[in-house]
Image (cartoon, rainbow, N blue to C red):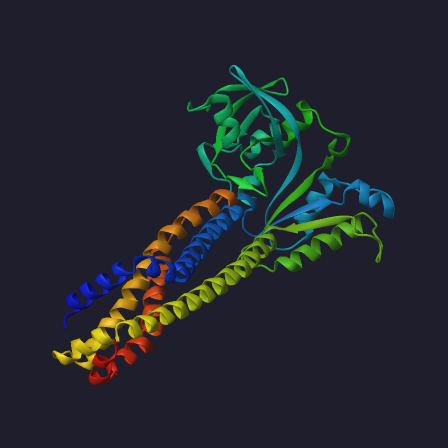
Length: 406
């Protein structure tokens, strides 16, 4: 029997028992859908991790003081200052770039629109520390920081809120009542930790200190944090320990006292997210494998029933010249066609599920060709593995005994 003949016979047999075939295929459908969702979620998560790295930058450390509510329970509250930033830059090895940072809330007005947002008052090296990419314009330079220039870089959300589709470059906005010239717009970063990473603005730290309202905790020369970029390939743990040791010495923090500072390593945060997503992906893969096995067992069971029901038909085929390998090919093709049809349905369901997951997790839907190939091959493999035993049983029937059975 030709391949085309086997396919026609398989489709006819499955169509005559359409409901039974559909119910039998549910396990494979769920398994294939789980593979697609797993692959799409993994791809989306990796793309999201790239965005997280873009937000934090590579090889970056951010130095924070312990919140006053915690530190005050274990001795006097300490602060970060300009002198601490200079000391870190001078005495800690493998520093590529460093920026002082002061942050706060401010109202920005542009045209007929106003918006309340976060401001980040930083230095020019901030763009190097966090690998800042701009959709248009430029970041402020060292001269503008030293002179306290009234310039500003907008986050994507702030730019679109104030100016819509128009370019804000060279426009004048009022930041806390102070006029400032827009010189750049940062490339959109998306959501981070449930918050809009584009709803912020960047101004020179000297400008913010002289013109913008600040809380008592960040009054000059105090800082909200110090941003540090380590030379590529350098040991981040050693740099962290060196920074903490320097700050303990400068602030006279004795051994055994409650830590007054925290050095946040962005790469460790990203690695933690990656490990969590890998674990979840593994669990989903195990679920998909179990669903495929259960579906395969169901298909094998229904194919054995089909062989029993069609014993007389098998005997007739053998009597008119069908060989054992023709019978084997016929029933094996039937199992494979059923699994491939289930795989196609599972693919559609998986894409829909992947889209739902992407929307909920706020990452892009990416269904790779490799994932699709794995899903289809898995469904074909299930058909071959679990369809072989029923097909071999059908091929092994004695024609005379088969013809006697009604």
